[in-house]
Every structure is written in C-alpha cells, then in structure tokens.
Image 1: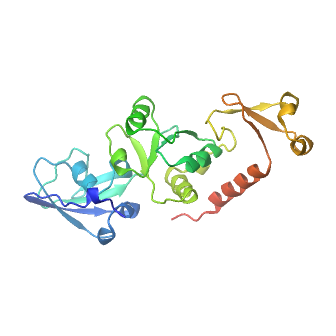
Image 2: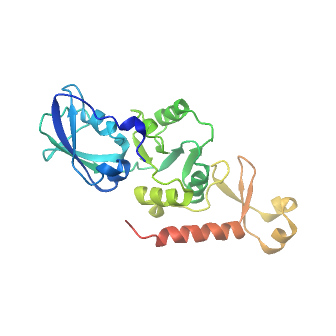
Image 3: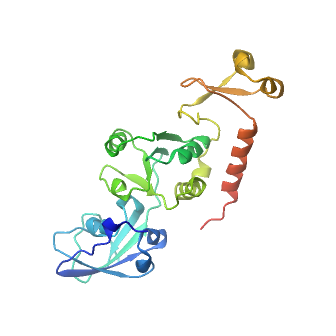
Length: 248
C-alpha cells in the first residue's frame, strides 16, 4: 500500500503527464499503476520533487525523458510535458550493502552469498546516512523517505515483507548470482572466513561433528566455527532455488 505521505496531489498552475515503466508501477498506488498520471505543479518544482511526491525514490529510477529527450533530476517540467520514468538497472562496481532495521534475515542470506552486508537492528537513519556518506554501499530498505535522502546514490525499495522473497528481489535487481561467493563470510558479524585445521578447534566440536566432518572455517572477528553440516545443506538448497527462479 502506498504510504499516506505520498497521497497528496501537488497543486500548481502547470500540468505534466508522467508515465512509469515496468516495476516502478509496484511503488504507485493501485489506482495509478499502468496509467498516465497528470500532475499539476509550480514553476520552481523539479522532476525529482514530482516523482518522489508519488512515492518513488530517486534510486529506483534509471532514465528520465521529457518529450523523448533525456533529462536530469534538476529539470523543471514545462506545461504540457510528457515525462517518461524508467527503472534503474545500474549497479556499483563493488557490490556492498547496508540494510535498514528489521531486515536481519535478509542480511544473513546476503552474507551467505558472500556479500559485504552491514546490519544492526537499531541503526538510526542518521547512522545509515553516515555509513553511506563514507562508503559507497547499496541501501536496502522499505522506508521510502530514507531512500529519498540525497546521500543515497544506490538503493532499492523492497516490495515484499518475506525474507526469501526479498532475497529473490535483490538477486534479480543487482544480478547477484553472477557475483556470489557463497560461504565466504560470517553470517553473524560479516567478517571474512578463514580455513582452519580441525586439530586447532577440536575441543570446541560436538562428538558427531568431530566424527563426520573434516573441513572447517573460522571467523577471526567473532570466533565462530563453520562446517558443512545440515545448515550448509539448507543454504545450498536456497542457492539452487535462486538459480532456478524464473526471471520476471
């Protein structure tokens, strides 16, 4: 459901027609999806202001056209303009994430695939903005206001509330399977894992683990030990399902 924040139509003396393509329609109210939208606006308002007034963060947009001509976010529409808004498809060269609150399970999935993923369940908006300012990361959130901050260069507004569905969304949006390095990161703290000799951690293992497993990895940051047990098999199944997921 589109947040109440974005439901007010801007009043002004000019009118432009906006057309949103592909999955940008997911972010519009049901009555507006797949339709041309007429907005009234004042002379000083930019296309960024108008697009975001409809609930679509700038990070979701790749190309803007005014009457067939490419424009930027600071463009001020003119009366009678037809504005086409196309979804983003770009991605930073190095894929690293920071996740908003309540996305802990998604953070685990992304770390499982080997992606550098920062997450705390008590990040403030200011802390997230500071992380993005100092380090080019992709912000994943369902908070559209947060995604609209100028400091956010790359981001994605999650459509689903369910973690696995969210993972499928992010994998498709950023083409993650071609970049994934599964089981290279600690699921708990995000640090890189290192191979460790069984003898070095033998006293920490349960009897059946000692008996049936010989390959281990260690997180030097939080001292957690990993091996290819039943949890690893479940993660392998999840990765296989990602590869089999039909493209939209």
